[in-house]
Length: 487
Image 1 (cartoon, rainbow, N blue to C red):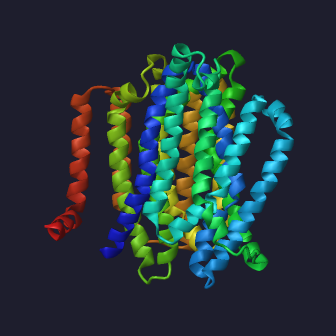
Image 2 (image 1 turned 90 degrees about the vertical axis):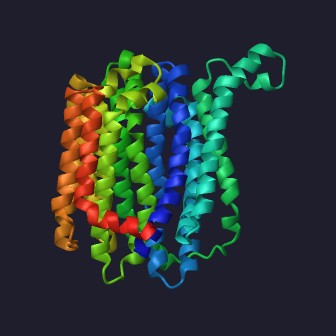
């Protein structure tokens, strides 16, 4: 039980580092949707979609390789130094080339060159902290990790509030003041990216001592093995970025120009209601990945993985149903402009899609532990193909509903493929009877409530209570044992 307690503790702290920043971002969603026209909000989301896509490329799987080799190599210092040197020089190379060709990139993707410049610097600053953050996780310093992560988003949030709310008021009230000289009318989107640049730069400065603590020794033989392990991870990451973000880019590309950015804005706002499942999945992944590798040599590793997956499904199923039941309450807090609510119908699909992705993360342990990360890349590529094909086929007639369907189809397919192949290469004794029951009942209740009884809480709340009791009935032995231990 102490093993699970330690896992829960680390996941809770890493979850704090994820949940608190995301909670800060709650303020940004109503802020953006209230102050920005839907077209500009859509433009912001398209730019961030490209940002996330290139984040994956600049990491090139080195983060996962770092954890794998940190736990298998005797010379852990060499792993840290080689990873840090590698990412440092590739980032500087990217920065030089990207700044040189930024005008061409701007013309190719039809985004203002000023915004391209901002993206390049954000990408560079974020890439340079990849290994320092990984080092904190590897040396089990989750509290410091959480403080830095939360500080980053706190600065970003504070600057967004200042630039978008207070600076225009200061410029109006004190037009000749020094502070008012920083105000430029119609520059709201630019202020959003300036806030990100400052936050990313400060984070880099906080973690910069890590670069002075290493001897800058580069183990080329080790690096080749890390790259061989990490390259498929990068391919999988690119495919994941396509699954997660490319729908915004394709909506902007495939819809008529006069409505495209507004449709992206509406879809992105309602997409944010899936944030709770994203929080749960992301926090869990941050805690579980180092645990998977460090626990792999234990005799009961497979049984442990099976138990963890079952409880992930239990908590995820309960959260899925809870968020879907109260989605129309949450929209009042997060999306105050009712013109954005037209896309509320995609919310259950997006939440379930992220849940499927979380289950896939659990199931993917087999190819990481058996050094078959190339299979993980193939699975992600299949998901990316489904995403691209369905978006191309469905967006012209169904708009953002086509994107939501593509997302859930891609992640659902990846989940199933990983389970089937995992049974072949690294069989884990999952309790499929209970897992299927929790997952299936949660999906049925969610779909029935939202599309037949939406906003009827006399139906939704009893459904939630019945599902909670169903969990207790099936897990009462372990629940009672935990309660007795606490008593």
